[in-house]
Image (cartoon, rainbow, N blue to C red; front, side, top):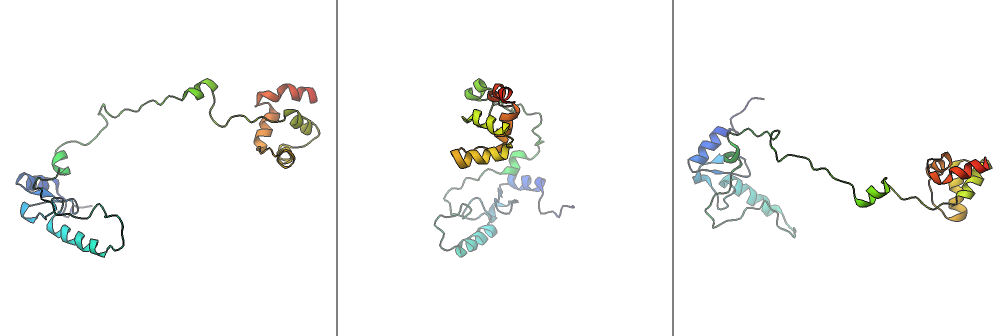
Length: 174
């Protein structure tokens, strides 16, 4: 995409060195004669933003972009003059390192994350499984009759031995 000439870093730096300022709305440098009462904006942007602000009615909080006349004559920092000739890559910067986040004490002592194991009637689950009921049927029966809300996947893990508590019970029943 060819540059139409509106944005030109070299021109902006030259204008600022000659006493100009950086407009935070149109994002280019302007000569000092074009500065508005608000040092952040040129006169054109200042007038436009004031007209936009007049259309806002009923807002409780004043928007941050609303221009304000300032008695300060100090110029605001310009992003162009800060980074004019520098390479802006951060690859070699030693400040850009990733912190290693260590797990909490509870995670380190238990060894696993996630929800804690519920106390389940393992003997009843083993008995229902021995009678031929599947994990989904067992889970719905526990919820309906005992009010225990448990996932059928938890029942499936319990029956397959992934949850270590039921291993001896399964060998007794079957």
